[in-house]
Figure 1 (tube, rainbow, N blue to C red):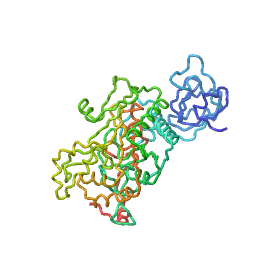
Figure 2: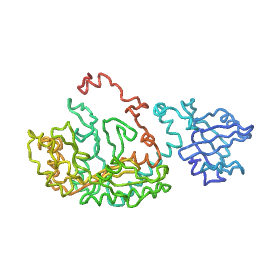
Figure 3: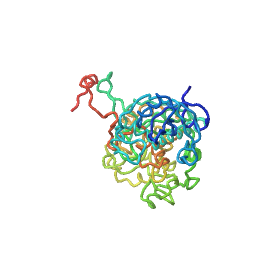
Length: 478
């Protein structure tokens, strides 16, 4: 007989079934032995009667929490008064006729059946495969799956293509530190893991894809915090022949539909989402990630808002010109600021002249951020699709035209070969799912996260490698 899930057994009262999973808890009540069986879909009570076959009686005496077992029998209604309203299967039980131990389990380092008596986070992450057996984390993984599946269906129905972009790429000055990967074949040269698919998605627009998305893995060698990891997941999205409003409208619709279909218990405070300028949020909330909830004690209240009209540049003492970008150097300024941005004609030897310029801080970008309950869950912009405009941005940042074309050669060439107007957005999927799951940090919604100090306690990384490996790569460790 084929094994079925516990969630399927709920609809098979009176039928003979086979359930397989983990022993969640065991209770011995006189001649009758009860245990809760757990699989990925839920829990069900199993009863082993005293007249069961000898091998089953022997097995039920041996089982302990987290043993893996197979239980065959008939699904029946529980006796009146013994129902458990907290379980989907709480009105039913399995009358076990045959119990088989598939694998034993040593005593786990922390309890699975009672998460309230939980171990430290370090122990949880070291034994993450056990931690993931907890019902809360199983629900978080399920929520993550459902959100990503909905995104794929929603965008596919609107003509988007999911396209994978490379993980091994080139190190470029995009903001955060790159993770570098040494090349064995080309000693002394390195790949870089992508901070985002920014250049590739713009190249896809130049390739005529027009509507692209990807559930993308991104890597940034920066300090960690509750909403940040060395590697994380984005919804990456780009569209051709669009303006800011087109991108914002599509993403707002997608977010509303996710809540409506995946998290109907949640309430969106205001639709359409409020739109606030950067100056408004900084003056009124002293942050560009305002928490607009009217009742911050309501865990199911979602207050989305858009923040727009960001300054393109901000002060940076480490830059030769005294300026850096606030969000993305590939962004396009608002139309009324393009000529002002292109007017800076000083040579790089005179770059210091720009440090106290009064016009640069007034240039506004087409950047738009989507904020939820005080968290920035996404950001994007309309891009510069003309090379002269992109070079003007980098000149204010202190890069010569040659430096830009050397670092970003592919995109610079592409912008001269019929690049369409385009723009897009990237969501931090981990942050969005964290808020929807009412979790305090993104580690609770990632299957195998790093610690707050970027260590993988499960696999024991980062770790040393052998001298032979380093020699193959032509590398010495100082």
